[in-house]
Image (cartoon, rainbow, N blue to C red; front, side, top):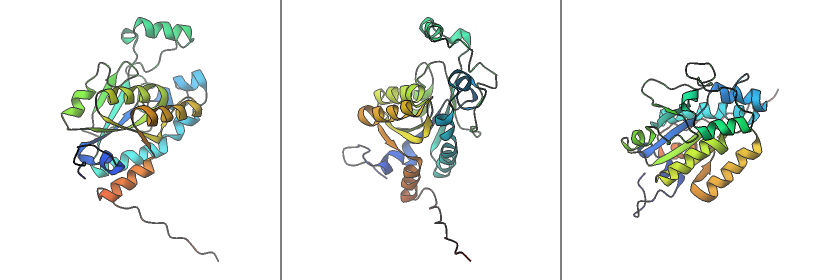
Length: 228
């Protein structure tokens, strides 16, 4: 679907059209989403992060069917990559436990995994654009619009959304495919995004837009079974 005469992507269908859209999966790693990982040890409550995993897995599958680029962001926080302000923040908050160390279980993806040919972008800061190849990777593929999912809604996903907006990408945060350390932080991030630098949609709304565009098959309506 083409943009309007001004070139703006105004509708959800325009913002998710496969030719210029990427699904960016941010930091869905064991340290942030699995029992025994850093988040579990530091804050214990994984309900928000884990609730995002089933709809995210379905969205990734449908994005692949639609021909939408799926890019995976992987946080790596080896000691040599931590700045002085990062180390100060960790010490001040009592969060000096290592996480997302190269080659460890904690740094590995949790319940999602890139297929051959799908890009993996390594980052060492909250934003997936900071000091990485992400912008170049997207622009060389003609990407204008980003669907953002992952963990945490209010830190790494939101930081990526803000930087992406500043770099002139259309931003859509996928509400049910993001999670945080609690539901309040998650919802606050969605509110800020919708107000300041992007839009918010559910995975069902995005898939329905792909169905209307004809790039994925319409899911069959379940047939009610009669009793007796």
